Amino acid sequence: MAKNKTVESRRPLIAGNWKMNNTISESMRLVNNLTGKVKAAKDRDIVVCAPATALAVVTTALKGKNIQVGAQNIHWEKSGAYTGEISAPMLTELGVKYAIVGHSERRQYFGETCATVNARARAALFAGITPIICVGESLEKREKGSYKLVITGQVKRAMADIKKSDAAKCVIAYEPVWAIGTGKTATFEQAEEVCAHIRGVLTKLYDAKTADAVRILYGGSVKPETIDGLMVKPNVDGALVGGAALKSDDFARIVNFVTPEA
Ligand code: PGA
Image (cartoon, rainbow, N blue to C red):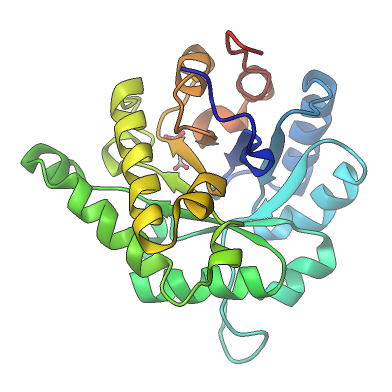
């Protein structure tokens, strides 16, 4: 099925999440390798979410290139006594355009809750940074069949007090926890089912026009071999890529995805 090409804001988006990988020199090597391999892409957005220590050099290296830079976290206050955190003004000054919010690893290991996810997303929007809000169910909820309920709750709480015009700017990444770093990709149908469900939740929360503008990504063991099939799905607008984003050949192939209608 063809995607809704009339919605300009639903440009496909491929974001690489480097997680806690790459020193400054390793980041530079990866970025230099990538820029040579990624096609000039007028019809898609490409983002690399580097670790905080490398954001300055990566944003400088990618200035004027077709790859944008994202952070992996963002705090809800502008400044203050929040050791280890990073604020929106710190990111905007660097030219960071995106921030991952509520990744399941943050939820699992660092006490991220739906309330803090919401606060971070709102701070990002206020600063003109696009939040990539991650949601996803555990293996247990998947096996019990209650995964849609989990996703509904996570989306509703993440979007609390976010107005329609801001909601349309958000990116939501569906990342089933059981598929992250496990090599177990969700099937294209499973990804589409939940991405469509998320759009349905957004339609109820806002309206169809707003829901139609939100880009919904799939994440979890995305590989060069799976991206083309994934991107054909009408409600999958892109991918959040972990492991494969660390290898320039793999990430370039994912970014250069081809769909039948392209
Ligand atoms: P993965 O990670 O591609 O290594 O599964 C995805 C993510 O955690 O964003």
